[in-house]
Image (cartoon, rainbow, N blue to C red; front, side, top):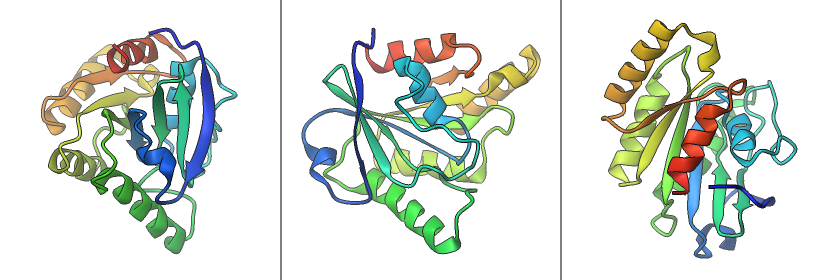
Length: 189
């Protein structure tokens, strides 16, 4: 799929018409600082569209981006480690859970992004369980693969696929755009 238009629509922190207006969602979720926002920027070929930071926990809302006037890419806050106070961290976790468990919100696909160098964490395993219980179709992105050898990458991909119940795993890197291109092809086919 070629991205011909991409625009930020709205950031929400709870119930809002943008979440249920009938436009399909592709949601991105993962631990803080795994590169969700950078991945979205690579998919849409526009680094200015998404705020990218090296500081974990910068995404504090559920951000909706309208792609080609027909699909939302939804950037959820990071879970796990974030440089925020405990109260804010709890609010962010509740916001993620609300989005993923509200029966009126049915994403077309959820993309779980993880750091290939770290592998699957306990937080990622919990996310796989939530997505399976909610019957959300999902895939996994093993990001930051440029930091791994070919052998490490193969071992990581195999381990991630096993932990996620055999779902498709896409290796990506902000440095090498082919992985994002493959992911976009699968998401918008």
